[in-house]
Amino acid sequence: MVAPVRTYTQPKILSDLVKYEEEVGYSRDTGTLKAGETTVIGTPVAHDANGKVVALPNDGSLACIGVSIAERSAGVADVTDGALYIANNALLADSGIVWPSGISGANKTKAVGELRALPGPVKVRAAV
Image 1 (cartoon, rainbow, N blue to C red):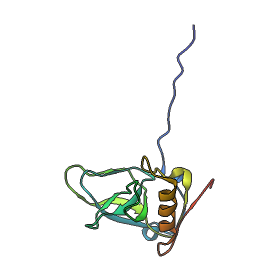
Image 2: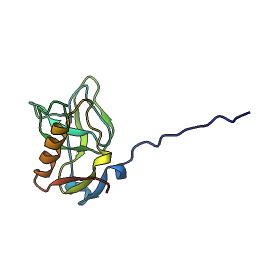
Image 3: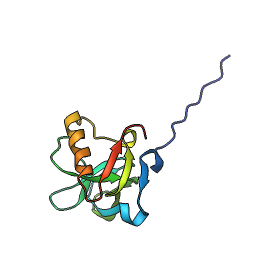
Image 4: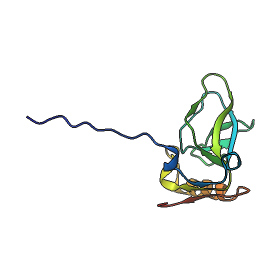
C-alpha cells in the first residue's frame, strides 16, 4: 500500500518580490482601490482616468505606476487607501511579478520601462 502524498504550495510573501527598498514610508505609496478590483503581492498597478488604482490591463492602455505589495480587494465600493504598492526606489525580482493574463512581451517591456522612469526608479531584475 502506498501512502498518499500531500502537497503544499507556499503562499507568495513580500520577499519573493521586493529585494530592496528605501525606508518603508519612502518607497511605498497608497491609493484608492477601484470598486471590483483585486490585487495580490506582485500585481502591477496603474491609475485609471479618475486617478483610482487598478490592476494593470494587459493591452498597455494605462501606464504602470507601481507593483502591489499586499492582497487587497474592493467589493462594490472604492476602498480609500486600499491599494498599497511600491512606487519608487526599489529593486524587484521579475519572478515575483504577477503579470495580467494575456499580456504581450512588448507590454511587459513597456511596463518595466515605466517603472524605471518613475522618480526614484523601480528596477526589475532577473534572478535576484
